[in-house]
Image 1 (tube, rainbow, N blue to C red):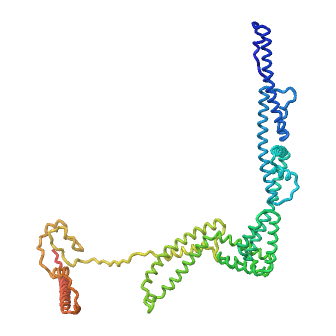
Image 2 (image 1 turned 60 degrees about the horizontal axis):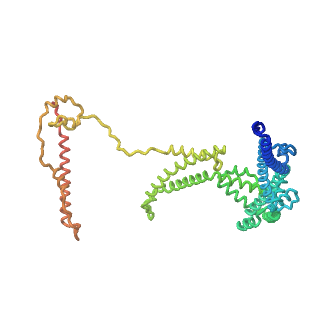
Amino acid sequence: MGEYVPNTLAFDSDTPLKNKLQNLQQEFTQVKEEYNNKLGYVQELHKQLEALSYALGGFVNTNLIATTEIDVSSLAVNSLEDELQRTEQEYVSRKAVVDHSVDEICFTIDTLGLNTTHELDILSKKYKSEVNPDNKMELCNLLVSEDSMDSIANRVAELREIRGRVESHKEELKNNLHRIWDILRVDPDECEAFIMSNEGLNPEKIQNYEQELEKLLVLKQERIGEFIERAREELQILWEQLYYSETQRHQFLSAYSEELDDKILMVYEEEISRLRLELEDSKYIIERIQKYMQLKKEIEEFQDSTKDPNRLFGKGQRDPGRLLREEKFRKRMDRELPKLRMELEGSLLEYEALKSRPFMVYGKPYLDVIYEANEEAAQQKVPITAPRTPKRETVPRKPFTSPRNTSNRYHMFNTPQFNRTRHFQVTAENMTPTKEDRSITVLHRVRERNIRKRSQKPIRRGHFGSDDDDDEEEAEAEVERMLRESKNAMIAAEKKVIIQPE
């Protein structure tokens, strides 16, 4: 047992021999009972390891299983327990793999409708359908062995390959059917109904696909000329949408072939698919180009309409809001056209960087068109400045009037003078005050008359053209005459003034 027992009872000299014998017999009985318990436990561990060894084969360490001189020490028991735990974990792991693989094998066989005679397929179906726990355990012990695990892995891979081939074949048949349905322009609901009624991978469904494809191929062959002509029309539409030039169109030689067969039709379909992808990739650029061309067309029409000078005053064509609409149109073009050019330039540069070729419009890189338009707009743009009256040329001359003596010493510089010969201090000392004429002049009387508030007369019948109106008109004419006379007198007085030197 590998345990130490005390020997005090056997060598105690004070204890009688009879008592020593009884104590030894009692101790022997306890040790034997403990040994038998450990021996039974170890034998049970041996049985479990033998059962796992039958299922797992060489994975189990059978050297720990002894038939004679069984070691029941704690070290041996711990080794057996560790080995049993390791083998049980392996068994559980293999059983999980077997369960999953058996489910996949049975599902694939049912999906493909295979009438298999493979031994592993039969064993898998039997294991999946077994309900008796003991029988199922025996089948599981057969399947978790190393040889069975390898066979299961190979069979699963083989069935996956078979299913992949069947799925690829069905997908190819479906694509061919869709292509011919599109050519024949079959109702989409009818096509969807056929696909829904033939779901699955069993031989019957695959045969239905093959028969439908064969029937459609015969129908397509009867109308091959019509389909090729329709493909040519679609090709022309795509060329126009992509702004292809004649040189680019002639690169597709099959478009000018006179042959009418499946090969030519397939070439057309491949070219159409390629152009559709190109159109989808260039959708943003094409939309901006169409908008830019539309704006240029509107500008040309607007310029043609504004060339007619009689558009505003022509008889029967008077349009009061035309000038306002024209101004709004100019502002809209000035706002939208530069912005659109900037967007086009960025997208065209990005396209050229991604595709390693410029975007062509009728054989010419459209980026060059945008650059030319920008240069033309920069040349035509003239800075608009507010109108200014031309500055008159100044000629030095003597002042018309002499400086007026005033009490303010700085007021003398308000009079324009050509040459100031006197010093400021001398002028200030010799300056004498003068009396200002504050009498009421004709101008004061006219100003008072103009700003005088008069009550408005009520409008009466026969008021217009009355004698009162005539009197007022005569008074106003008299005032204007007096103003003209006073103005002429002032001008004449200024011309007669002579500046005398001091």
